[in-house]
Figure 1: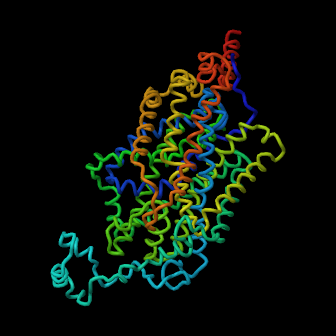
Figure 2: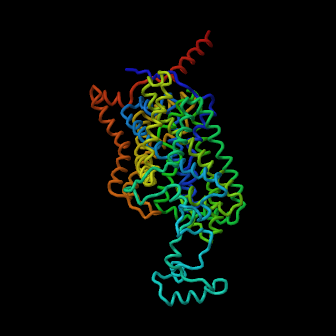
Figure 3: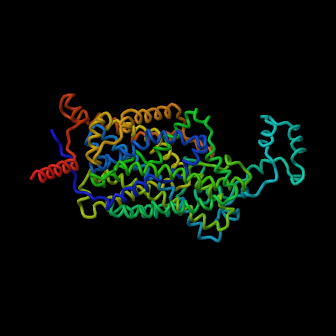
Length: 609
């Protein structure tokens, strides 16, 4: 039985450049700025590039090529793509669920950035510079004001002991509390409990953070307003379809590079920039013997490439059938990883400056995740002239980096649903209304992340919903669907029908063995080493019901894969052999391949005539 894999007439990119810019805008996001540089420094500096590049070659690039070419082959989104191996359609459903969760919480980072941007140009100076505001506490003190004391920890480290005695302290005072330090003392509890105005602005003014998930508190209405603005911007970027989106990404994808370049020029001219760059790049090859370094490299590749969410499939599905998606995907991979390294130079030049100004080590001021964007960098620019200008430049960059990743993930979700239910597109303003309704629902759910306890909700979503084991589980089955269910030789024929030649045999080895093995191995390692989520910055351990909800977020996508496979197996009539044929390797005809064959036949007929 032959099933024609035809779909309703759909939009296409105006040019191949639209596709490349959309992929760059999607794949290059906040992970390149707030995660990669820190991981590089933490895991051996320049030596980390070795496991990172290996992970890129064995996992990142193969999966990136697979997803974009899969979408182009079938001209359909993340659910319809599994018509070539229907038993794995649960992978598409899982990707849609994961993308839905991601769309809800990722965008809140942009509302935080919008808050900082707004406060950067509405006051005479950035409000996190001093302690003169209503949200500041009596413990507030600038990190650039040196406290005239040394802590017990500093003294213990000097003598290399764990327990200090009066003799240690007396000897330390004799050696160091002389000359300019004649009036220095040993730090008291009050001295050590000071909090910087940057941290108080983040905790009290932006987050209004409560004591924990158990204390949600009220909605932060300024954050709710900025969250609404960002949702409206994302809606306007995609509601008209890819021809409109393809033009928007030229601005949203290219503008961050201009701002990164400006920040790099300024960063390299700062005192201490070399110190930061040394910590960033100095290789420590002994780190390569630690399993954590390799796991971090693999998960960073998956995280920064935006794999497994259906967005790359959707972007590829708007290509012409004979577009050379293979070379274009490799180009985007190169640009993505290059941007991660480039962003590290920007970030660590400022961190080196900040460490020099505060007379601390880079290790003490370097942070990852939200802490880098909203604590380390805002603190680093305080000593620069024209602080507001550099603040606006940085948070504009954060917004542009985040917006295109957000709306491309949204496009992946909507393409999957609309392709599965084409009647939405056929109704007048059907797409616009459907996209608007989902955006409103997502915004309302997302209000839980902008309450006083919203930061704890955000961390819960980030840890469980769309990363870690859930993503690795999905990617493992996605790869197996092509390499073992459909058959790798058959897939290579499909690739040749699109690009005109067979891709390198290297990708065959990756798709069949290396990539699924790495995905499953890192998944098992993560589960074996699992530790419940904890926020060290606030010394907060989540309650049991919080972890239960987190596992619900993970399992809501993970269980779709075996659940759908079991359901479709029992629902499909026939013998075991017939079911395997229909569900794993059905005979289908690809619309683009059929048109290619017809054109070749016509060309042969014309030549013979």
